[in-house]
Image (tube, rainbow, N blue to C red; front, top):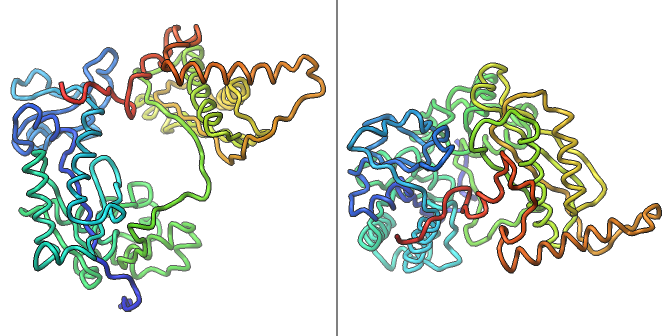
Length: 434
């Protein structure tokens, strides 16, 4: 057994708002989130081929609906089923409201929002003020949030963030109390027995397949594998997974993570399958302009441009390829023309007329934009003039909104920038409280 004597022992809560989007919509309709039969998906034009964004527990149970169910598979004619349009502004407001409730039970710096429906709380210094055990405090938080928002919470309690997350995902969601507590000593009994590796946080289907190739079929197998071989075969992720299999996580909640290197990017799921080059390239141009504007807003230039293309479902099945991704090292740039030109070059070099459904563009290896390299062979300073034009357009959009000034190409068939300008997190913002 591993000697945990030198590992941090804190009291960490990982709290999940159960079926958050669907629960918020249910509460707005005066329904019990655990009993309502509701799915959230866009009913707008071209959305019929999209995916369900959220479903209530009862809808999942009755119809087998999940967050990857296609909209065309939803039994929309069943009178029991409520179809809700996305309202991302509302969900953000409710998330902030719930996190303000958490601040009654621990210091603000000891709260780390993990996603829009999950938060980490370090209650090491405060739990004893609210009861005899951390479990009692978890219950008080559940009751406070349920009373004030109508949302049910699931809580994992652990000696570190990893154990709290594992307790949440692998046990709490199945307990009547929606609470579970894991300590280092519980790892052999509770974690090693897991054979569905993809169900464990941070592993996923592809990583599970790689582990299977190494004859690792359970968390116990992973814990007793050779860590040096894991690192050799899988890189740093192999070492991380080995530590996870023993419940090791030395992260401290109040020590916020700062990435060593930033990047700026944008991606989108297309509203339908795209197969015409002209339509695909319109979207790539729009994405490139948006990313370039973000670079300029942060006074950065990119030295690497990366393009990702995801094929449609039918293309994926026929070619057995999910898409492609390529990167290009370039001279430092943040102008629309340069970013667009390089993105289109990457696309044209790799695309072989496949039908696509997803596009992503990322600019990385950033440097400060504190100097401008002039071209001796450009006596009319066209590059400098283009930069000034880009900055002028940025200023107008920042003041009056993106749609105050758009290119004519954004009115062409297939363009998405205007429609997406009003979205929040890629979905309809809606009015917070209709």
